[in-house]
Image (cartoon, rainbow, N blue to C red; front, top):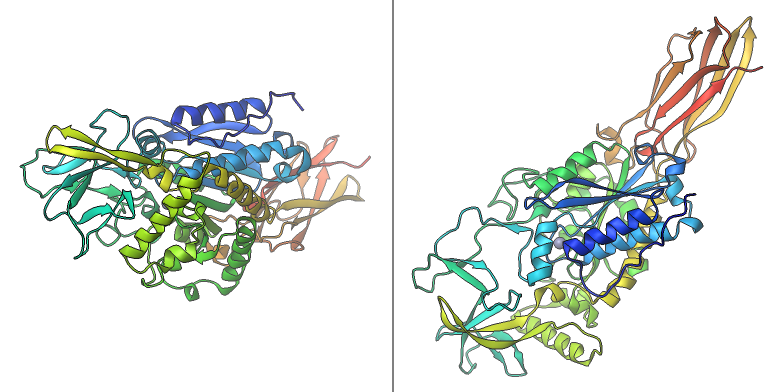
Length: 547
Ligand SMILES: [Zn+2]
């Protein structure tokens, strides 16, 4: 094993800017070049390379020849925890390699930040976007987020207005709450910090026009706007997502997929539309079982995506979503971790958050969170004091409020523990990989320079090579094919050399194969057997001529 540099530690101090992320992935790859390679799947819209870490033990074969597990994080701009959780897994796979066999058999493809532009906006300004906003065409009377007072942040602007819907919270003056009939002035209206394009001076100001949500831009069951908000123009119209799709569809070895998000903490599983009765019952059982392993390691509840909503809301239907893509289009068991919000770190559970019935109850949770925060010793500045500013267009405003990048996720010290749990889930999921092997190779001499070659091709992994019941008929999941490559001077006597075995079930399923050859010229080797095992990996064996 080449002696590399020390594996870099992953600090859970602050969220990474793009440059910090780049330095970390470069250091990780540089520390163990036999285990980690850093590539890019393409450039973002603003020209940032989208980092891909490929992690496997190169001494036991190339990543493309092994079953592979894909992780993507930070598709939503402010959900920066996903980058750290994905990096934790990448780093820990490397650090644990001496004690674990997983990298000898499995490759991990890890994209810690699929949305580097959106994340950079969120991490540097604390402004709010879902995935990206469309600024290609500026619309009159529309506010575009910008740091107008020069403090480097994009916060909230509040303006006194007789019809303003908010008032300062009498119980916590830092917060704004909904105005009620009993509220006392001053009343405020709010806007994100920014400038209004071609403002006509009226109150009719809209914010940032069209919003894209890349977790509605996957191909399966995609629907255009307005049927599905945030969908984009067509499936994979977002170039970052298209780069990932190109990568996925060029890798038939991928058998598991995972995404990282921030919302009330949960282990999410399919379906993302309709009902789970529409899915293969056996698949639902496996997904639930795996999700419960995630729940055990994180303490999060397991929730099918369609049920991830407030108690008094209807089931959600997310079109063009990662879960239906992963399950229906890739045929895989797909999960997302909602890594939590600051509310969760304050001891407020996902159940509490979803039990909220109205804005007053929501405000009570925020107040509780602020109280908890005030008692913390080591803390980020999650609140910026309301400060007067003479806005070039609006006149006197106050700028301040909560910093969204910190509200979106758990504290970084909580995130470290959570990332440990999601890493252990990934190991448990990945350990079920299909594993195609060539076994029991035997050669008998059956005549004058005539030989019978026998071998068994089997799947010794737990998942079948089609992974899920859904995957059985999907073309993306390749059936197992055996290529017979005869050595020079060797003639094949059997009717066929190559074999197509179909899919192999897990653990014990295999096929016994047999070939007859004659040797016309003196040779050491009879043939090479190459097995293209799809999700079970590719293996080869050369068959020597017996002495
Ligand atoms: Zn998200």
